[in-house]
Length: 363
Image 1 (tube, rainbow, N blue to C red):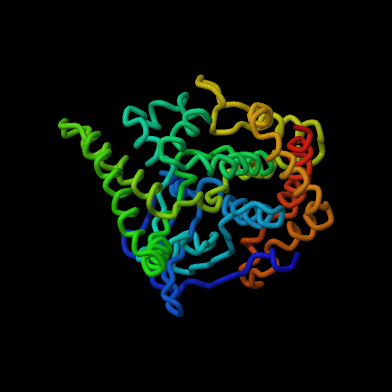
Image 2 (image 1 turned 60 degrees about the horizontal axis):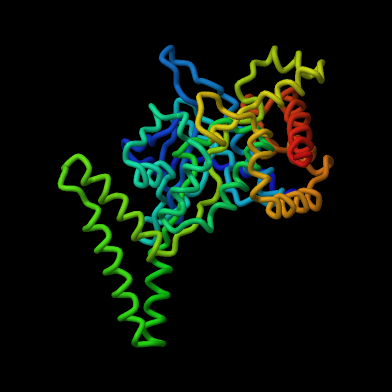
C-alpha cells in the first residue's frame, strides 16, 4: 500500500501560467514543471466573497478518493499533495495534465450533450441530466462502448459519496497522435486503405454539411457537433480517467459535526443513506440517492456489477484502507504540519468508506 501514499511537491518555483484559472467550483491553476516542461493542475478551495475559503479540506478528499479508487481497481487520475508558498492558499492537490496539446484533446461531457441536443442548457435543465440522455448522446457519437466506463464511474461515486458528477466532471480523450501513427502504418501495409479512409471522411463531412443550419445561431453548435462526431468516428477516442471527485467523504462537515457523528453510528448511517448522485435515472426535479441509482442501473449492467463486486472482494480489506488513510499526510514536511488532515476526519473516513462499500455490494 505504500505506493498509494501521496507524494509531496513544493511547486513554489514552478512557472505559473498567467490568467490560468480554469472553470469549475474550485480554484484551479496551471503550473509548468521546469524540469520536464510538463503541465500540471493545482487545486485548492473556492474563495468566498468574505476572503475565506470554502471547504478547506476538500483537496484531501480529492487525494484520498484518487488513491482509494486506484487501489480498488478503478481508472482514476492521480492526485498528490503540492505546496506553493506564493499562493494565497499555499496547500492543495496537484495532478498531471491528462493531455499533451500537440498529441490529444479532452472534450468534456457537456460538449457532447449540447452537441447532441443544442437546446440543452445545463444551468436551466438540471432535471434532464439523466442516464438515458447521456446514453442517447453516446450512441449519437458512436461512443456506446464507453457506457460501462460511465457506469463504473457512478459506482465509484457511490463508494466515496461524490455528489458533484456534473457535465464538466467527465469527458473523452481524442488521441490524434496515435490515430495518425496507425493510419500511416496502415497506408504502408495496404495502399487501398487511403481510399477507405477518404470515403469515411467524406461521409462525415457530408453529414456535417447537411446538418449545418443557415441560422447563424445554430451553425456554431452544429459545427461543434460534427467536429465531435468526426473525432469519435475517425480519431481514437476513449473515456477519460475519472477526475474531479473531491466533493465527497464529508468534506463539507464542520469539526463539531464530525465529533458528534463519531459518537453516534446512527448519524453516520443516515448521512450515508441520504447522499445523492448528480445523474438522474429519469427526468424530474429530485436527484436520486446513490444506492437507488445503482439499483436501477443493475438491471442493465448485471454482469458489470458482478465484475466490480469480485474486484472489490479481491482488493478490499479494512487493514489496508486504515493504513492508507492514517498515512495519507505522512509525506508533509514537519514545518507544514498545520495542513495535516485531522485525526477525527480520518476516523470519519474510516467509517464512511467501509459502510458505503457495504451498501454498494448489497446492491
